[in-house]
Length: 308
Picture 1 (cartoon, helix red, strand yellow):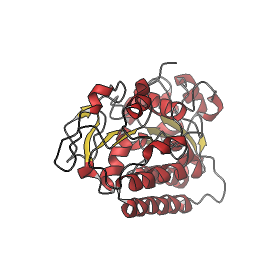
Picture 2 (picture 1 turned 60 degrees about the horizontal axis):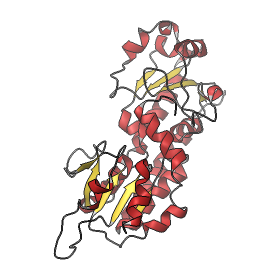
Picture 3 (picture 1 turned 30 degrees about the vertical axis):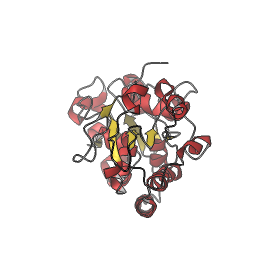
């Protein structure tokens, strides 16, 4: 596989290596109504489980789960290199649930064929890979509600996110069809994402032109690596930085790159910091991401300097 930043690698592997939730994978997901021991190997699933009230059932999470900031279990598993041994005996034994193997394990991609190995041992596993649409993301939230006995809370969360995103899309007015060109940066080596990805589809719904789209190939799964020269020549009017936490990229650092000082987005102050985690997950903070994307697009549309 080609070299990609870790966040892009996780999304790529998730999009090509695991069946969509709701397909044959769901056959393994017939967990008890209220499983007492849930293991989440997906940061997105972890956020959703806590948001719908299933947090007390979660006894272990992956190394990258960091939200909510309080209350997460101390037991951690490397989701990039999981082992059966690290999972199978991780649960607390109680009089009501004497077994130490999980009732339910949620993965975002199938590293080390962990799904097959755990299923063979009688552990229920559900795969929730990176969705390519809002409908897919909301379906995963509802699925977690059904699996953990929190269907009503999950439905309410999904409905709220749908309303937030629909309202954001409706709030963008562009009667003169101005073309807001966008560069979305995943890391400082210019990995980006196209409109075929989940976040790319959200941006497309706002009417923007994604400069990464012409560089899409079947090999990059929607996450092409651009070049500094190409980004400068494309002269995007808006830049999103989804590498502010991992790589400490700032608008000032972008402006200091060769040639970037004359890029429209830099000249007019439309380089927007995003939180890496929020920007790479598709759970309960999805509304926050969409709010940030929408606000930035509307600011560009309303800025007369951009359209001189």
